Image (tube, rainbow, N blue to C red; front, side, top):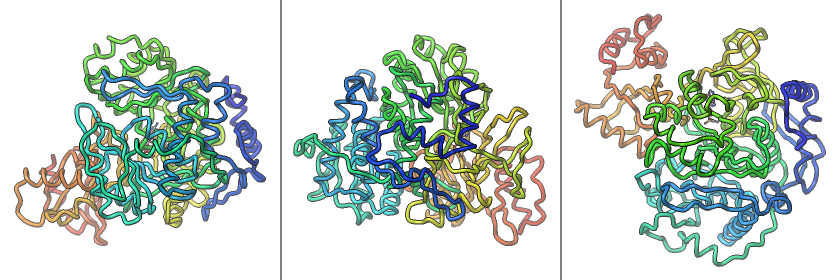
Length: 630
Ligand code: 7RM
């Protein structure tokens, strides 16, 4: 396609065009898609309200671009390769024709169950083809999908359903995950006790476990599919109609529902997919993320399917039945482009290298990483052992809010530098700001990372609370989108993202707000107050360290057990603190603010210089915490 960047010179040219004339740049790219009606203005924006509109008054349906427009040229090509949890079970391959048919069929199931344009539909499902089918079926009828990662607890699920008043939920009986099964339907049943907006629950049979079906509410997926045909004309959507909501953690309060709209998201995910990974027709692409996160939305489903690629969907985990599972799948499906997270690389690095060397890995051409800063050891291991030193690595920096990759090298095209995300993609205008909020224009500097100009797939709002969007992202630095990340820029203008500068932590690539964990802990009857911080963790990137003040004398062992169970119930097992320290007080300022800086230092094991503690209400407490640190 015409927008493929094929040299460093070409990158520089496109980048310059995208800054000098963004509207012309993006409209040329948008013209390669199929629209029911073209836009009349490319972009309307202001970052103060904020109000951002791309391809204004354009009409389209994204699934016509993911599916229908490929049928004539590649209807019989595999769209989705599904690899099951258990290597002894059968792979499923769906061609573009078959996927189109299944999406249309399930779109009719949704309609039969009362869904219509604009309704919110919650998906709480394992990584099976039906999840991708259901996501696209929502988009086909103009319903807004809200996928909730199936590791979240009943309470977290209920909060998300209620925040956007979903009317329908899609789930399965259970999920396979490595050697375990996860009781999906039971969790949904528990959540739905507190979700009055839900009228129907469509249940997919995955493990065949016996589950209770509630009359007039629960229906079986396979029964519903039998009632419909596979003709479904796509709903005509406005470019700015909402495509999906995805909840993500912030530094305060409950997770926010990040809202993405149709036209801009489509253009940007496709553009970045093809350019960053240098996708060529026929390539097999595998992104190991879960569809419950943005990476799965943009680079398992939308980006690859828009490009007419073959996308691999994996139900399992990297270490089951053994630590060679990823590499076995790479060989089995002859994967050309492989995209994973540093946490997975570090976990596999710690295992016997034979798990890698048993496999050929000769199909690989490009490797990618995402989700957190990659350390040099992991980068080198990945480069040498997986890429055999001849696959470029793209270190892709982006966020749920950005919708697509923002800063990354283009595989084999632009220069790369280990542990650096490197250069912004065309259309992306990053800047670094200092503590006073002034833009730093020189190189060889460090600051907070902002974006100065809109890009097509940026978030439009946070669901039901536009003011929160404004406060969170557009108020810290006037006229700029603030990412929440700290960042270095080297002498050549290359970017290295150093991590969050707010109270968000990144545990095994899962984004968690420290406030969320604190709120959950504080709800436990044993807890008076808590403070949670992140600390460096060899495998997970960051671990969770909780300081807890208890209501009464408790047995520490039992307290830990109780609190871990409590977090599993309130958020999900992935948010369990790695360390829980009982304290008699917390270091607070006179105005009652917890001095997290001090707690972070103690958690890091760096107590040599805790800075000025004289303004604390009770400086003595620091000694106690330090002496009992874990
Ligand atoms: C795609 C995704 C976003 C946060 C972001 C960063 C961190 C993501 C990188 C990275 C360093 C990277 N969305 N992050 N990618 N840090 N290098 N290549 O992860 O919303 O779940 O998380 O993740 O802190 O703000 S997310």
